[in-house]
Amino acid sequence: MRTLVSICFTFWCLGLYPQTCDLSVAITGIKSPDGGIQIGLYNNRDSFPLVDGQYKLYYFSVKDFSGVYTIRDLPAGEYAVGIFHDKNSDKICNTNFLGVPKEGFGFSTNFKPRLSSPDFEDCKIDLRNNMSITIKLIYR
Image (cartoon, rainbow, N blue to C red):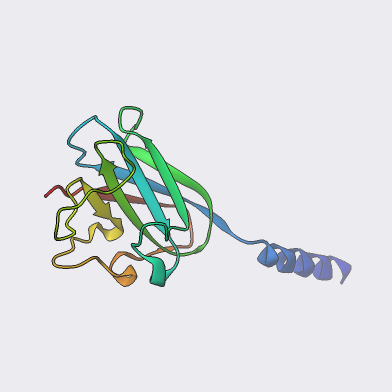
């Protein structure tokens, strides 16, 4: 009986430990080795895809990029990813007078916006286990 109680207690304690996952993001379609790549990870519907609304932000040189960037130890949950190729290294996604990005960009689920920015639901991924996604950059 003690063994059964001990086993049940162990499984109950394991359920209290927050599950973390890794998200591997493969980025394709990069047209130039210049500048950097910025990955914005969002976990809030209201802040997606706002600048400075990211849950986590990652920036690295295109020249040093191997093609896949892994974000480690994320709590399980719903996320959306927004990426842009910062070709001129100013850490700003430059846009034209209509607000359309002049630099390469992409979103999780490879959502292609038409006349406005995407919603969180358009780009949402449900991270419950380690996951890999591929995002192809769009240049206009």
